[in-house]
Length: 458
Image 1: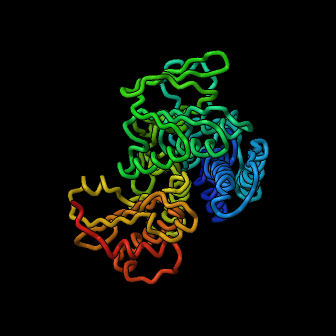
Image 2 (image 1 turned 180 degrees about the vertical axis):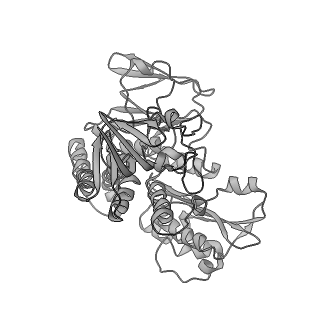
Image 3 (image 1 turned 60 degrees about the horizontal axis):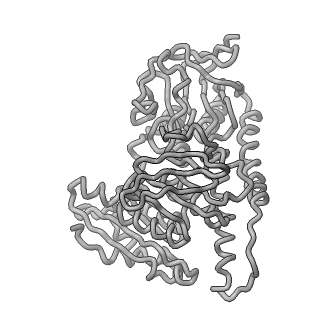
């Protein structure tokens, strides 16, 4: 059956549903297509379920340390079935709500199945052929399956299948030392598993500055996590009920023997089966759809939003994509991708909050800059909680006095970073914060102190 709409939206991640509802409320007929679970990565396998698990793991961690605070608890036992059940209970309303909001909205038709372009403005889904002058691609991404010898011969987990785990792995081998691997590695160590992280690179999360990578490695090791760097030739093999990971490390070539393997080596966009070639939609060698400053593809009337455009890969960047598109199409508000300041958090504990440029990027830019650092060991709030790992760091343009970037690795770092991020969006000088009076005792109160002791970046 053929049907014509004002707009077709492919995918129900963070961007698509909000855009569909906005357009429907504006009187436009909208078709939205979903082949899997409503809500995308964040609702189903990302932010909501994983951070719920992180919260359970933190409770176990704090409970084991209760005696340090003068609280006697007795032996701590983690019930993984209840941990998963709690995660499901919290996740389920978000997933169901994402679908119900679309079904309750007039002017929206929902199609279930795989979308496939037949032309620049024609999309097939099952037996239906849909056409529209405006099409929005919001298909998200999935875990990369790396070319590891022996991987196809063993059972392994990824960030999606980890959501179904309701038991405690005896020894979890994590392949990948970046965001997903670190969060799950620390989480399961706190639940009670032995954990080994294998990282091909010479340091963890190589996109971050080296001092941050080193401090996060120290945080992992302090919790009893084994970190194997320079794991350049990983192989996997089944030996009875165990899995043997071969690791070609110059200092320690001995294999790692574990019970389960989590592959956390990155993500790729879900664009390979969309038929982009039939519409002439350009993409890079990794499958990310090429977009301009307003998220338009090279094909007039086609936009790409969310993880599939390679412009962020986070829930908040996907939602901001929706805001940019809606601003331009519906609100006469010319918003741009280039107005966005890169910002995100790594939810290890303590967390890392990041905004703007890294120190490495500032150095490469060649601009004259100032730098400020402050150890969390000097923060009263960190001492109150007996969690003094980490530090704060800020980079400032020496001429404009505007903040170029910041990193806060420590207690409440994911929240404190916003005080700097908002000043960056305001394009105000750093002195606005350095002269501000903040509340004591907090982590934020030391941000002005850090900014009052800036030094030239050597």
